[in-house]
Image (cartoon, rainbow, N blue to C red; front, side, top):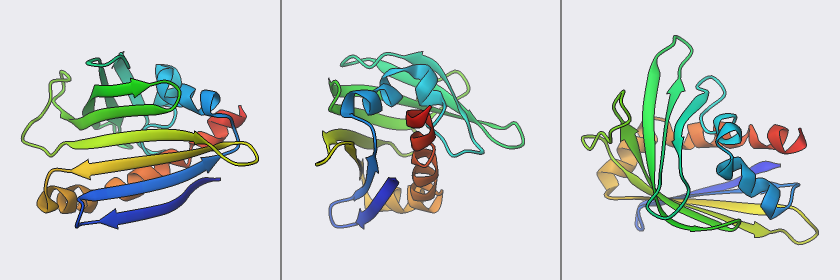
Length: 162
């Protein structure tokens, strides 16, 4: 079923993406918890991810890069702020250099991933991205953040079915 709703709110500097999946919360959680599964959906289909570091404990980090159609690499990182498996993961999310070090010249967001049971079975996923300023929100949205996230999440159903 995947993405069901996207809401941008410049007043609160947030973008909320809601999705539904026909799998239980514990199974959906594995799409974040297992780095090999995360690689198969984190990033649009034409920009597959490679996870180099994966520690979802509080204070832990995830470092990855996405490889574009022409072989170009786009590096990123998460710093884990809060985790309560299998319902909640909160990270600071940003761009990185080729060594995985945060590129603080680029914007960062706070991403909150919430997984809740759906009536009748399945899982609701709510991803709330919080931006530091309206300028950063506009910059990231202009770079395709919304479309990229929707395309990435569109790959989750196939992983859950497999």
